[in-house]
Image (cartoon, rainbow, N blue to C red; front, side, top):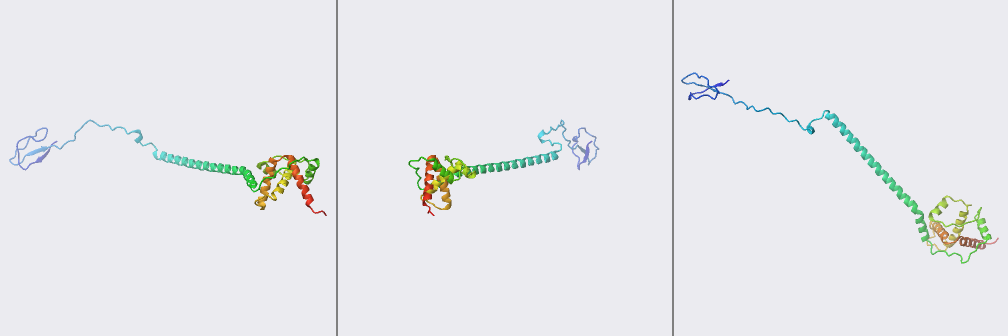
Length: 236
């Protein structure tokens, strides 16, 4: 319905904004005017589009988010621990490799160091033909239970011989005879005569002699050294 509005003065008899004219009360001073309020424009109904699936909240989002966060934390912690374990294992293997290399190279290094302290090299006997008496003298001196033999030694073989020493073994007699020759030469041909240098140079020269002299040459030189030592002792 139209809402009447009072006007102070009468105006023309034009129709009011109502869609249908209504009868007015004639009055010399007042006229009724009906004014309809503005009505909203009615259009077709609007249907809201569904939100994309990425924007839709999942059911139990809080529980799933908490579970997912815990899984990620556990995975990250496991990865960090595995990486630390791998680094520790790699470091241990590298350390063992370095130590193994040092241990393997130590005999050669000590051999070279000991040999560098020896001035010159001994020369083998010019002519040597050891007799059974010479061999028997060495076997009796070194208390051998079998015939003596001289075998070429390497720095590693010499270390093994020291660790597995058997004083009655044939090879042990050969090393002892060679050491006797090296000791006699080093008495006058060492740059450093301290105890450690003496033993290191003696072992190095012993290895060198077994590799550069024949077995007969070592036996002849060792027998000659024993006879010289026996002749130099004062007779009682």
